[in-house]
Structure formats: C-alpha cells, structure tokens
Amino acid sequence: MSIFPDVIALRRKLYPSRDHYHLVGSSVTDPDWLAEVPRNRPAVVVMEGLTPYLPVEEGPRLLSRLVAHLAGGELMFDAYSHFGLKMLRLNPTIRATGAEVHWAIDDPQVLERAVPKLRFVDDISAYSAERTAHMSWSAKLFIGLWRHIPALRKVGRILRYRF
Image (cartoon, rainbow, N blue to C red; front, side, top):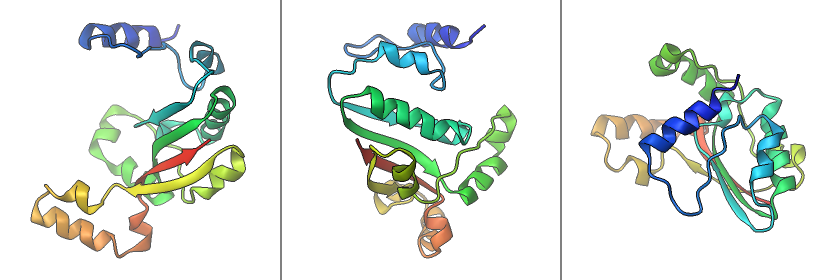
C-alpha cells in the first residue's frame, strides 16, 4: 500500500488549497502520475529537495518522462556533487531520519546527453553573496573560503534547464 495518498491528505489538512495547484498522491518514480499533469502548455518544474534522494538510474528517467510529457518550459532543481552527497550523509538531520542520498551531479552538461531535450541554462550557487548576506560573520568567512576551492564551489547548487 502506498503512503503517498496519506501524505496528500495530511497536506490538505495543514495547508489551504490554491487555484491552479493540484496534488498527486504518487511517487515521482511511478510513470503513471504524469497522466494527471496537463501537457498542452509550457510548464515550470521545480524539484526542491528531491533529486539527491532518487536512485541514480531514476533521475534521468524522471527528467526524460517530464520533457517528453510537457509541451516545453523550464526545469530547476537542487543538485549535489559526489563530495556534496558525502557531506549530506554526515548531516545529523539526514542520519537521524535514516534518509539515503544517491544521485550526484558533478557536471550539469552530462544530463544534456542523457536527456537530449534538456538544454543547460545555468547554475546558482547555494553560497552566493545574496544568500549569505544575513549570515553571521563566521559563516560568511567560511563560505568565502569555500568559493576559492573548486571542489567546494559545486557541492550544492540549483541547476536550471530549458526543454
């Protein structure tokens, strides 16, 4: 039995319904959920907090299904490098929940080859000056140092594609 309908029922209790907002009680790895998504207009797909948890082979499959189903649009999601996934696995919150992270993306152009309709637009650092403006001086210093180490610059970021 799927837990997803129960999650949707709880969400409906906690959050008010909104126009043009439709909840689907299914796993994104189940191809059948897309039948409930309109395909006759452009879309913006935001996958926040999802991609690292997908099995490695499911990430490109999900993106392929999305771009095949939708008329066109943009796709944005948070992505972590292999080093970033190692760091996530050490996070006490992740460890406490028993969650597992699997899918790392070191090079955003690799997805263009795996999903030919995708066109990489840009990536947004999780540690940009705008995002760190309200942090403590020590956090700013630490993040400033990260910007100068290539492997750390790409630990976590938001990737944006057109299709």
